[in-house]
Length: 217
Image 1: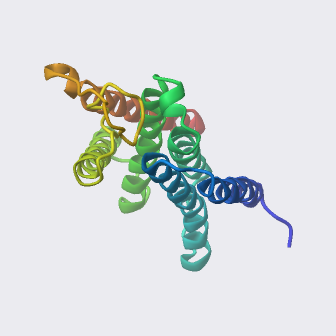
Image 2: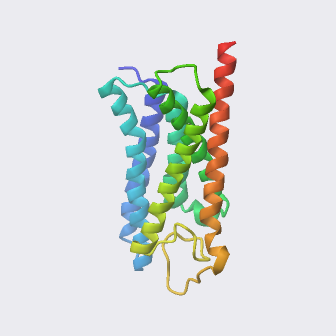
């Protein structure tokens, strides 16, 4: 059976991620410190999470005969690659301080695409109430961003991680001697992420509206 462009993308990314999983498992046997082991296990778990995020939507499409637009699927896959593969898996959060902001911007755009598409599906692709659809899509994206921050906060409290960057280190798994941020500075990462999510979602919705306007001409 001939693969579609999306099928080739899924296959390529899955093979690349499987190679990272194998390497990650091999590296586990060379690590000695507990924090390094936790970091590696977290990376491997996120590799599996990435594979699920790119495969499950395609399976849903095939089983339920439910079409997911290419721009929605590609934006989700791109965000997942930035966050799960590059961010924590390849330690880009630590190597590039701006990586988290870039990832949240992309996630905002992706959520804007998803939100507007879902509103369109619910309204049976009616051409009415375009402005209201845009507002709902942006609010939906902000809601998803808030849930993400709740998950990070919960993980930081239960597992001792540093996803909300309340510690001065750029690592996601804390080590002894890491220093906490003080006062308003401790809130900076979370609030920055929310503002960037809003900007990205707004940009995503504007892109969709411009595309629909040009298509209707």
